[in-house]
Amino acid sequence: MCIRDSLKYVPGTESLNPNYVPTKEVTLRTVTAEEDQRITDILQSCVVFLDTNRIVSLYQYFQEFDKARSGKVNTCQFFRILDKVKFCVSPSDQELLCKRYMDIGDKVNYSLFCEDVQPDRIPPAKDTAVPGYEGSPPLSKHKPWESKIQVPATPEVDMKNLLDLMRAHVVRERVGCYDAMHIHDRHNSGKMQPVKFQSVLNQLGFKITLKEARALEQHFMDPTKPEVCYRDFVNAMDSSFTQKGLERDPTCRVKSFQPMMPSDEVQPLESDADEQYVDEFMGNIALDFALRRIQPKSFFSQYDRCHIGSVTSAQFKAVMKNLNCPLSEQEFSLLSKRYLKGDRKICGDIGYVKFCRDLTSMVENPPIATSYAGL
Image (tube, rainbow, N blue to C red; front, side, top):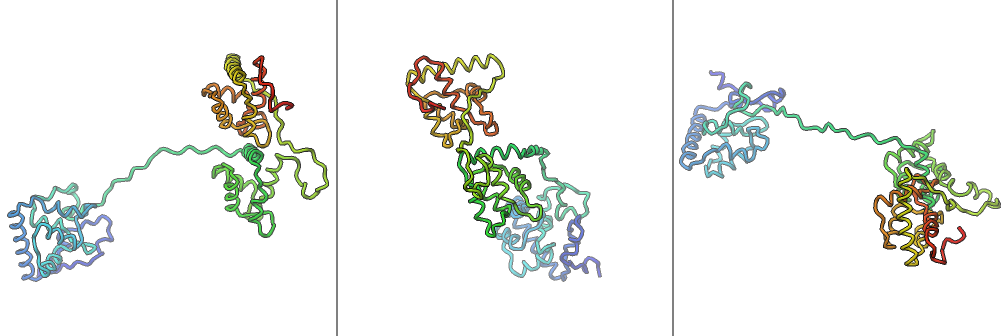
């Protein structure tokens, strides 16, 4: 008995070798002489059919279902293509074809089928050094593209500047930190979970990054358990007001609350030319406001709810634009440097009280009634 006739295909045995490529010898199943003759007749009729109907390449039809170019399709797809080209195969003949061309994973090796019916229409193999290259192509050795650009590391968190920034937000927006955090402390232990701590900070409007939030957690973390001591955080925020502990000693006399006095400080610019340039265009602004009898202090004070004598850069720009006096980028940059509040450098607030006083001193006939008289 010929060795070829005794070959039997056992699914899954060859897949243990990742470099295995199925061949015609392996995919052949044991068939009888009558079945082999019937398969040959089917293939011969298919060759005549393809030539008669002028079907150029049956191989390309099968590749519509073979996106991975493995040389195999499932049984339904195989016979669907044959039906598409109108080559009818009976159910018994379909079973015989599956005996001949069935491959790993219960799929039909259409490459071998096309080699039998249209050998001149199969494209040449790219790697003929691999044994059995006429079957499934070898595994792809292509490596996916990976970007070599590394994201620069973010700078380390300066805890002092971060707390100053958060204190300024508490003062400006009148944020009550204790009440919002105490809701999550059912046992009145002064501690809360880090997830809830971050959630409360977001609800209170603190614009901080994830890295800054992690640094805050580590700064106020309880050394004995993974919980945040929110009372220490509240004390750090309340330090921007008067003194802490008033709820324990309600009869204590404290001075009147004034978180930040409006100051007359002016920051020096980089050169004398910048100082002269600022004085020139500020004179034009002062003359324009005097002719239109505009008191800019009253417009700035609408944004200053805590009466600290400063507004943010965006608020300063908005007021000047509403007064029909828009500033160029250079002019605004020089003004923000000159009138930058010394005690609010972290936020970049602009002291508008000193700015309005300088405008008043530059004209001979300023508006008589000013809303900042006495400051």
